[in-house]
Image (cartoon, rainbow, N blue to C red; front, side, top):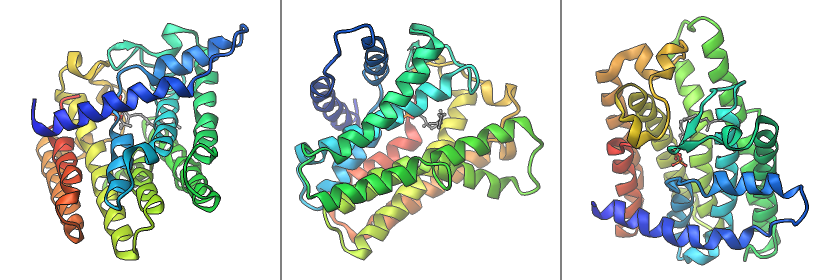
Length: 299
Ligand code: GRG
């Protein structure tokens, strides 16, 4: 295992050990939805977003335990988006992270509720008094998270454009349309991960801007590599059905520009993301390594 993979794996082990304490299961029959939430949350994600929160906050001396609630909130919200994305009305997937998707393991109505439950729980966690920051900081996090996830310039807006691209004809300027989809659908949560670190750590304007630029670049690169993996990834490593983008006529970077151009574009973005971190020293090395990992990832 490369050093970075070990670092990420170690982080994810620590993170996963802390999650069960956040789930006090009800005793009644309503517990089915909490079980579905927990099933999807504990279902083997890479924990890239929580790692980004911890690393960004860590740049400003915030210990991992102190950024945990923010990181957990973001992972809950991310998991909601995956559950809803897998539903028959959206991407209609049977497998996620190599295991049955939430609606396959439970049922469609329970999966919709599990997504709703994780989305709302994210805001409970981030605003909770057990999140060890002043109320004004927690309030700012709530606002940023809602904006990143939302329907105006956030993830929901990006998902709308993505669905739209499947249903309607290719736009006249696919590059601009794609950038907009990628920045919103995938990029906004990654941006929140980094920006929340600057809020927790009271970063300067320059440091904040550097991390925003970094997160925007890796966000687009992350989506492009996801599109590349949809074409040439290994289904057993990816743990989901591949080749669906082309089959569904989805607008992706690979469909519009081909594999080689897509790889070049992703590599250029990762170079720019690392350049943006020039204001930081060795303390940002894990963020630099994460950027490289996005290019080389196989799952
Ligand atoms: C349903 C509102 C709503 C939004 C869905 C996240 C999303 C928007 C769609 C998922 C489609 C997709 C595969 C996008 C590519 C980028 C992405 C979010 C990949 C999954 O993230 P990883 O690889 O997942 O970090 P793990 O499983 O490691 O957590």
